[in-house]
Image (cartoon, one colour):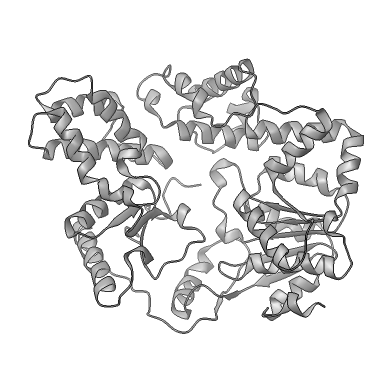
Length: 494
């Protein structure tokens, strides 16, 4: 065993690193040194002479993760390991065996904008991201347009099923006519290529003998099918993930493949990483009290850091009181405890829930940044401002009201989620801002908005972001507002 490879590892990490052969399932809780462990394991596979670096294939979920893994392996003196995303690997194989470089659609919104405009109101104003995500859900589950409606089951599409089917069909038609494919097509075509070309499949399997798959809790059926072709009947596969951190269910991902891995690979060694290096004992104790309500593989995280402050739970009679207390507590953290603004975060379920905090922080003179996109950069606000250019000066509130109504705003709408929930919240916010504006000039109203929200674009200050975007980030002070029944977890979430 190379001393440099295992230096500083805990017992569970060492066990994972030493398991260089056979099927291995690493259940890695948040902050437990997952990346360090799998990188050292790959290095040990090479250092022990078990595999050549060129025979190892590491699948990551992002290009950033692939680069980070490559850099860490390089620091350990290991070069030649192929670390790629599913899409990058599929593209390389497709090019090699077909001699073609497909024209990949950069974003589905390019085609969906015109399609959505033909839908009846209010669905024509549906966020394109919601429509694109629904198409991804279907294609990641290998569901073609012709089987879309029957495959829905209890899955709820963003628009009525018949309309979504129409969008799906038209999207595929326009994409084909433009001579393009999307990222799901790329995986599906590579999958079909390997199924239909035994020679290509044989070359791929001969090239790679050992596999490591990161973030395995967020694999979907299409990715799993491609992975099965790559691995074949061999047993030298290591999967890494945490079913508690599965966040892409809305695109068809499921932790089921992670949890069933030991059953599908007899003799699988399961290693649990439970020593947490990120959070204090108090935070972990709080999280562990919530964990029994989660389904899946039970993990009890153990802190390695020194004790810190206890997480506090506070109840408020009104939302306004909650916002005011949080803003004052943020000021105290900065002025009394010397916590930099940038080390403080407020997490919300969706972007649209940050409105009260943006305005309260602005009034208090506290700098802030909206990590998920500032208000004026989000689709609803941009649409309203663009359409105001065609209105006449006079009744600002009336002009904004007409545009907001035409955009499908419904103040009584409750059963919405995702981007549509943010869009509805942003439309309502534009309406309120117009009502507060005292002038009659539409241009002055637009200038007032840009001045008011200029702070959001500075990239500094207290961080406002969604839970989804916060995964993997660290802060010294975190506030979780609106911890209410049916709000979090959201009642419509599946």
